[in-house]
Each structure stands twice: as C-alpha cells, then as structure tokens.
Length: 225
Image (tube, rainbow, N blue to C red; front, side):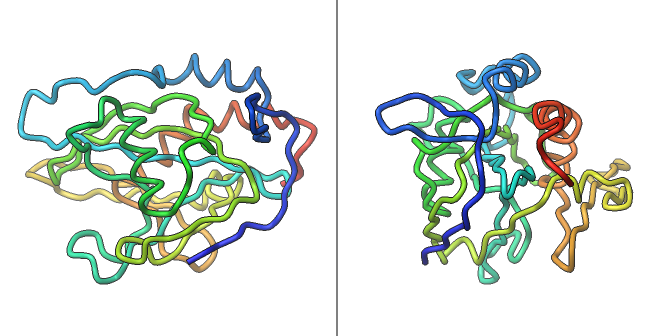
C-alpha cells in the first residue's frame, strides 16, 4: 500500500549525496541531542527476563506544524490488536543498538527507509508490565514521503498534531492496578480517533516533557498553531 503525505515546508537541510530536507535547525539538533541519550548508545543488559525492544518516534512538520507519526495496529494481531502505537518491535539477535531495531522495524512495518530518518537521540528506556524494556528513538523525517504499509502488522498511519495533544484538555491520567501496584496511565485524545495510551502514551508524555519545548523554541515566530 502506498500512502503519500502532501507537501509541507522546511527551513534547513541535512547534507549528503541526496540532500534531505527537514524542518529543524542545526541548533535544535544540538540542543535535543544534549537533552536526550546519545543516539549511538547500545543495548544495556536487562538483568532479567525482560525482552529488549525499541520504537521509532517520528517527528515531521506539516504546513509548519509539528506532528508525530503513529500507526494503528492490524485488527487480526494476537497482541495489542487495533491499538495506536509507534512503529517498532523486539530486538533481533543482529541488532546492536535500539536505533538499529527501531529503523529496521519502521522499514518493515511502514516502508520508511532508514536513510530518510535524521536520528536525534533516545528517550528513557522503560519496562512494561508485559515484560518488555522499550527504548524510544527520536527521529525527524522529511515531508512529504511515501510509505508502504505491511498490512500483516499495520492497518493505517495516524498523523498527530503536537499542539493538539500538548493541550491540558487532551491528556487524561487514569490509575490502574498492574502487578499489584497502582500505576498512572496516560491517555491522549485527538479528533475522533482512538486514544494514544499505555506504552505509547508514556512515550508521548516523555516527548512532550523533553523534546517538544525545544521544537516550539525552534519554530518561534514561524509556525501558527
């Protein structure tokens, strides 16, 4: 399946043989890299039975407005069917870093070429109650770009405007008892779509806390929300 995002704009570029354009400045990438864990950090031993995994947190700009790209998982999957999630999955034996896992999985699930992703850094690794240790990898992707979804895993793509889910009224915190412990679970609501929650909700909250203020500063005076 081919999905083509319509044209947006960009203000700076990443060098290379094939010039790729991104709506972030070099100063943004520098500050974000300082706020995040190094993008070339490898996997750390889990010290238990947890499964190591990584997801890509793709940031892009549509008509000057920053968005996150998520997926809706296929309804026939055995686990987490129909949920809103970031592209990613468990570590393969040949994966030496979360970045390698995240980029490989994103290419498999949504057809995003690894060379189209400007990796900025890593958010905090966290454990889920289902036995995974997930490392979110923050990357900027160009816009527009054509995706090719693997319908065995992915039903559709979801473009989430950051100014919308950053609003106080878009976030809901519920408390659940998980493994005999009371835990806060983040829900983010936007338009009439399924909410972003669970592990994905936690990642969105991390992103809003750490990266989004830098995005806003970088776009000051340029984007109208």
